[in-house]
Image (cartoon, rainbow, N blue to C red; front, side, top):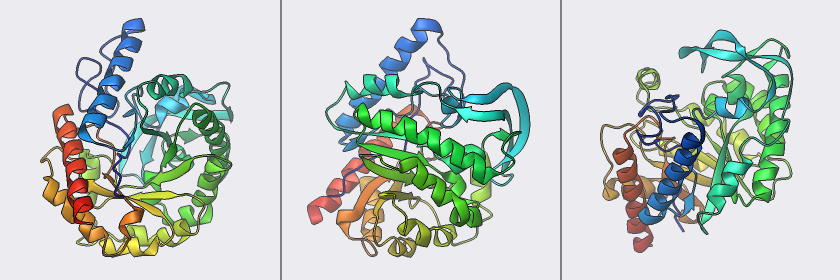
Length: 338
């Protein structure tokens, strides 16, 4: 009960990559880089075990970016044709690669990395992949002409990748869909359909992570415009509750999300964000416990997985590590009360 997990990314150490940056450049190169990635993920697996996290991840330490690293293994994308486009409904602009033909996956992208991580621990492992809608909001289209069509094409590739990860020992496959919290009509019209295509036939627990974004300046400024109550989840949770995905995450720590929205998800396991992903403070175990207790007003504790709000790549290493310890300790407080 109240098993802990994290939403995805963890900071890459400063000796491996530019710290506190979403797409920080690698410090190492060649085989030294590959050895460094393996060392870094080994350290984070041990950190999670020592902190008492129940469902571990690789912290996405092998990746420079949660979307683009997967896309580098996909054909039909021209990495040299850059297009400037607005991300998350023009919250910020990025230069992104362009889809110029039918997308295909000639071979697995992450499976070899995952096999290494699987050999490091006997605990349950979650692997995260970018969701189809978020991919389409992070790459330019010069071929499909429709985000819905392009998302379904990517969903088929993600499904194939996920099946290989499950065969290699993944216990949970999570799809990251921050775009779900922006394009509400599209989520209901075709976003959930593409998510269900991505999870089709997976012999594991499936999850979707929906947050208000990494703790970067653009997202912080956007949140300041959302008012005293953030009710975006209400627009998509009814359809998500009817979907086939097993687990749904939401951002609760240091946010203005009314916890009552959790009551909509009557049939799902909830990853309840109980530590924020900003570097300004480390939540105390008591603060984590209070967030969990608040969630329990609307969700039975058997359906709650205390979690991080989002990935923690952009925050300092020591802050992220301290937050993991607080997350575990806070869950233990409430577990003891029950």
